[in-house]
Structures are given as structure tokens and as C-alpha cells.
Length: 155
Image (cartoon, rainbow, N blue to C red; front, side):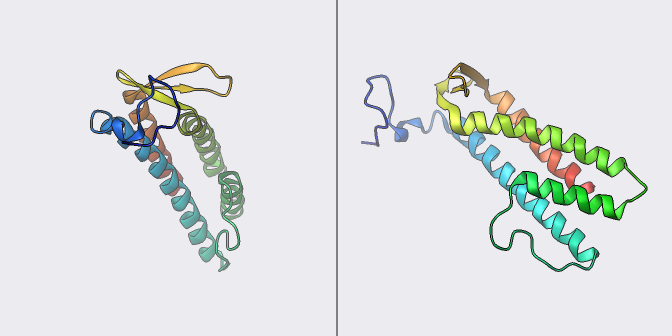
């Protein structure tokens, strides 16, 4: 028998979530992977910009920098590269707004996952309110995250 996380009659074991909830578990995993790939792409982009500017340091040599620090560094480097053209900085600001929205959604999913429901699952937000998240919404956020990554690499 699987691990029982809560001693409640209505709670299923973790091993009982497959195969009927495979799409749900796959979508949550895709969200986590897409965010990680965005972080790695941003680090690679900063590395390329550093190399083009003659700086050979590696990004986050001692500790892994936060997404906010990486975005700050990207904004600084783009400002140095394009001193007279502010369009790239405007695009970075728009990307940051989208990333913050997606990050709040990601935190809701990762920290507040409650249980599978028909057509999706429920989460508890920071105020302990239950919110239903449809699988279509989750897929839409993953697509938006992949779009943000493409826009970020184009800057």
C-alpha cells in the first residue's frame, strides 16, 4: 500500500493518483520543468552577453542567483549594450510582469496543491481559500511561460 500522508478516510495514497490523474501530474511536472528551463535560458543569455562584453565570469559561481537578480543583471547589461535604444528595456519590463504573474501561479500550484477534482484540481492560496484550477488553465500558463522564454532570448 502507498504512503498515506494524512490519516483521513477521504484521502488517497500518493500511488493511487495514477493512471487516471496522469494528465494532471504530467501538467504540474511540465510547469516546474518549464520554469527551470526559463531560469537556465536566462543564465545562458547572461553568459552570452557577458562573453560579448569581454567579461568571462560565470553566472552564480558560488550560489544560484534568484530570478530577480538575474533579471536585474540582464537589464543592466542590455542598458549598457543599447544606450540609445530603450525598446529592449521596455520589452524586459513587460517580460518581468509576465514572469511575476506566472511565478505567483506556479507558487499557488506548488505550495497550495490540495487535491484532484474533475477537470483539474484544487489549491489553497496564501489566505487558505480554495481555488479550482482547470487543466486548460495550467496548459495555458505553461504555454505563456514558454512564450516568455522565447521573448527573453530574443532581447
